[in-house]
Image 1 (cartoon, helix red, strand yellow):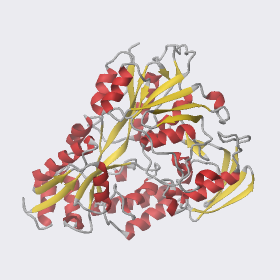
Image 2 (tube, rainbow, N blue to C red):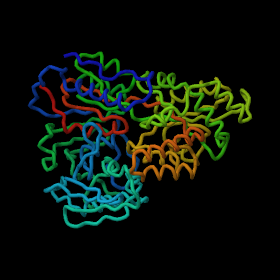
Image 3 (cartoon, rainbow, N blue to C red):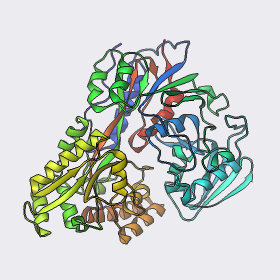
Image 4 (cartoon, rainbow, N blue to C red):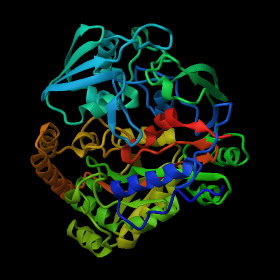
Length: 522
């Protein structure tokens, strides 16, 4: 059967989560192995999925580290949190059977009956408390700290009942509990340097061959085991993108992540194969606002107006993405903060006291991720067109990130994604300390911080929207970062893979959770 194209170029339209959701629905039909009106395919006797990972994940850990897409995939298969993400990216109970928000800062949870970890030990409310309090400590360096830091205390009533008390209201708290890095583990996994290989998720780790691959098998003690059709997932590591695509099209694997953008058309044009994806990860220009010219917000604003975002999307992502002129996922008040206006950029440069060719800036990217390098080269051309002189450097990833954290640049191009969908929850990470390799160096605006904190705690939707509109107005003028685009991120699959759906927006990297609904056609 010929698959319909399920991933399309999106570079000439603005980012829209509704459009992303529509794309995900189209992709779901494609990866079901049939089209509307056709019957479901007959399933194979051997329910093994051969999965080509884009890299070998770091060791599974509850004690810090920098998670990546492959980390989210592995965590989503082996582990579960109190909450989780459903097939459409919505938050739903995970290990929790039910919950009730009893006050703006308190949540009561009841765990499912009979939960066990993959070593046979019971999952108790005390395990939940131990894990979440662990993630709430800044020294743990957990990705989920962004949400868990709001935990003030946890009251454990018995093995299945607990109450989480927050320091202040947080409208995104349940989303943070669904983050794949907020998984619940036995107490031993919380020790320094311990590996978190024992989870309560749908698949358990059977074998890990370093540099080669790993093997997962279905965990019959998982609370939703009755709905899981795959018996086994055999993972092979393919850090080389071309090798990964070739492995798919040659039949060595059935499913791959992180399809390179230049291969979308090739895969979709091959009989029995398709890509499915969503825009989510976004790219931005970030500034050193402490040392150098971009301590002047006029020059930051000049950059925001100088960038031709459509050209940048074509150059870096072959058009598979969305030009971005504001805040991804924001309402209308946050969508058009800037525009492509070279003349306005020249005016701002002059207002800051510089004529054409009088200001040299250091633009940084890296050579490891070619799409970031290509994006930076496109931005370089735009800046030079309005009068900047650009000194471009692109060291390897390790060197680049070290320099970025130290502020050794004037302007850098980097990618980002929100932990959760609510801008009031994820924007603070981009505009507040500490220094990281994917935010502007040294930026601080107490007024913006105060407004975002009020928006996060606000329970009235209209009042929250008003506060966010105020925040967007500050961002438009102060330009702590200048968004460029959202890139399409896709999986590639054989027609034998049925029932896979991609999650929309910022939940896209967690889509492998949906392998619980996948089966292999005969």
